Image (tube, rainbow, N blue to C red; front, side, top):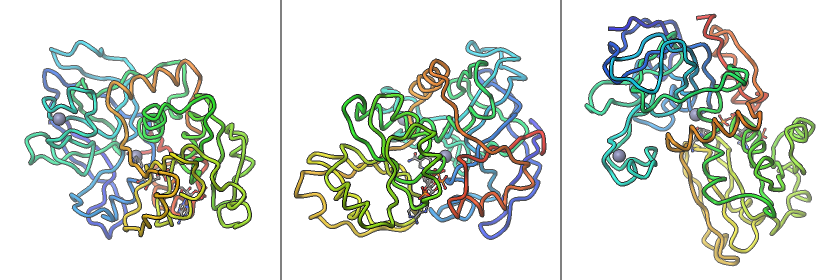
Length: 347
Ligand code: NAP
Ligand code: ZN
Ligand code: ZN
């Protein structure tokens, strides 16, 4: 067994606190890496509070994990001790279904294994995430990290990065497109960076007027305060795509008015509560509302390589793990610029 120090929520009603646990021994195909940094995703908060239901406790959150390899199994070919390594939201999948064969492990039809709050492929062993000092992962689910970029700022690419990169690539967003990024938080700010890098005109739709200057620094061309009806009305029928990163309940019908004919509203934000959708928000203009989950392993590596080539990282605030609870509170208020990353040396 691999003795591990981490931070866990013991129940959905308790704060995170130090918790020691065991990870599996390093198997023939496993990589063990010591965690240097772990990003803080809004999904961590949804899950430790069990807002999506079915939570497995104790829960060690964290799925934006980077660090340095300290051990490899004797069959491992892709990594060696001393390499930089990263793991995102998945640590395994069935590997035999159609989606796994297509590199879409995030849509594994037999159920993939998420990095935490999930079960291994034996369907009984719980997984624990990256708010911890070390992790053991099958080499096929470990990503190579370039040493050209700031490692702490790379961590959020493993979830916020791939979750925004993947749909923009899937819908071939680029030159000539007008896109809106709804919500300027961890995912949103990466959506802006990728949208700009792919050549689209990017508008941020935000509830926070104070974020306008930042949005422009991130590369956004336009900024709309969503609480101002006049500003919203001025963008009616304007966008080809809306990348919706909002974490809380909101009115999809209101934003669908901003799409052109054949426009697509892409949901990546995952509010825990259902929302009423009027068919007439879609019918005139043949509009679609769609969803997208993270990205496959090969695409995640492609995204990391793209970021290394184009010098793209997350804008981060490095925190002590003891400050995780106040950081969650700030995240809930939309007060994050634009991703908290835990410095695991403070564990
Ligand atoms: P975050 O950093 O907290 O950002 C969310 C942003 O949404 C906020 O900064 C705020 O931006 C806006 N917002 C919050 N409450 C709002 C409300 N009531 N109405 C309108 N806007 C609101 O969160 P995140 O880490 O980016 O995650 C965003 C969502 O994506 C979460 O639900 C998360 O679980 C989900 N997620 C999904 C996937 C996937 O695979 N699909 C992957 C990762 C995360 P403004 O201040 O600009 O309004
Ligand atoms: Zn995430
Ligand atoms: Zn599968």
